Image (cartoon, rainbow, N blue to C red; front, side, top):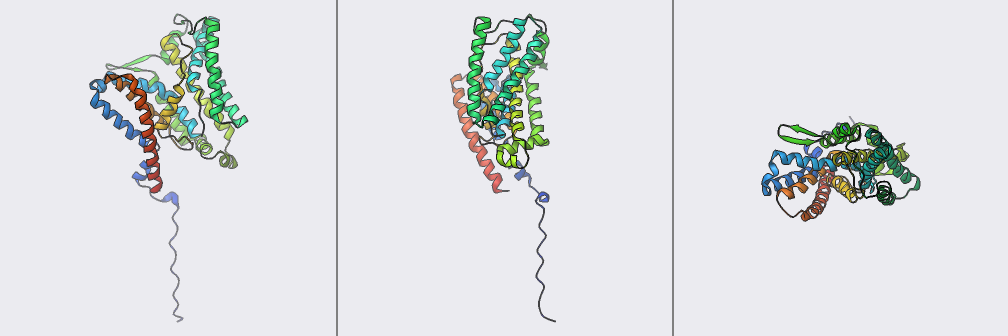
Length: 351
């Protein structure tokens, strides 16, 4: 017997895919966690300070305010996850409404003709943003700022040229208006509570965006190009196609929002929409999207929009001066960003 002992065998290395992940770690890894906590805090706050906030009718009003923002916030969130911005999104909504209205009125056609023409033109503008971004390599901030300025001028210039004023002509008596109103601007009554159809559009778009992000190859591409575009391109991700597709998504949502604007009020003011693009970005950031891209969720954008709806209407129900709204919006942006950063650090620490 030599007296030597065999070296102990090393334990087999577990596949990291088989390692059990605790529910807490999964929860901390969700981008929208911070916004959900913030939404609960805002809800409790206004439930205490505003007596009418908890009424059923108030709930429908809050959801409507959230849905109008949320329809745009969902595709803007996907765009931000992909590492880009769209500063023209607000005025693009107005452009979409103006095109539908003026084309229908001037051509004396069925309003659905104007709606379809508006869809084609709005998608073309979105494709233009994506094409210019990928071809020129300029920052999306510069590209879409240029589009924002051009659309602002075109909205006002064409409306004055065609209508003679800064607003469009009424089209409420034209053929097809009632059916278009039913699709884009109708009101549904559930019990004693009225809900705008935009809430259904909002839910559908958030569900679609979430499915794309989490269940499709395109969703993987979005995270990849937002994290590191050059590395994504090196492993075969179609970066150009992905970014153009994201801008088309924003344009499609702008078309929906524009039709709601038109068929809710019958006429459109050419100067509307300026500044709304920042609100869409704020909702996405409050919902957990990073400014640097590669991280976020569509559900988070919905929570951010819901916080916006609660705050904007909660201030009214509390009978406060509405001038305070911007202060609360800015405070929520800062607090949500800090909370989201803390949650990410905790998630990385427990990984």
